[in-house]
Length: 251
Image (cartoon, rainbow, N blue to C red):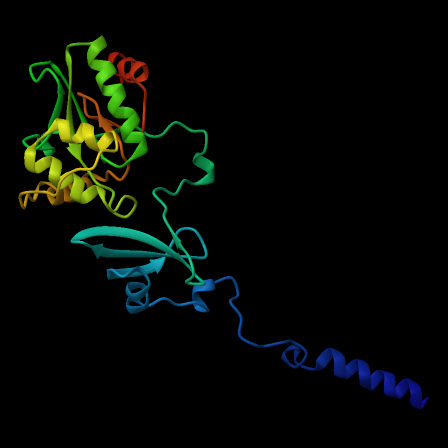
């Protein structure tokens, strides 16, 4: 009898004792990693050695997205939550968008000044193609050759080249771009593409900074970026046959 009474009292204790007495209530991330990790602007500035304007959690979990200024230019860099690694991300693609054709963007060509643009081809050609390029970008170097091949096939096409140095990826391209634009020299751009050393800029041109502001306003963040005569924007490298086909095809 005493055994059954003890058993009943034990069952009552188990079923009516608050759950909190049996559960662990220590601190945890609970799915929100940012609640356990932090990165201040001062910390980010010391790690990256830049002037930091904003720190926020990135789209990809486990990373901080840091906006800042380096050599007078805006940069965006990612730091992992351990603060041991810097991750360079040019674009984040949702998994559901993989395999789908990118949406077509159109740019108002009147928003792009061409006074500082370098020209490949006949300036009198009717079909004007604008290209944003980086002298140190490997895909830009490939497209540089494709541009020259294109004007051999079609004399009615001219390329206007705007220099857009990706300073957070190619830190030397900014000064190279200044040197090229100080002389407004296609020859110097050719030299940079070929890997030749360029002299220091002999002027204090603001053209490079203006191009960087322009690309930010237009939402251009990839090199090369090609803008067709009708304003269609093509991010990334394409070969000459594909370019000609796109120009001939209706939108």
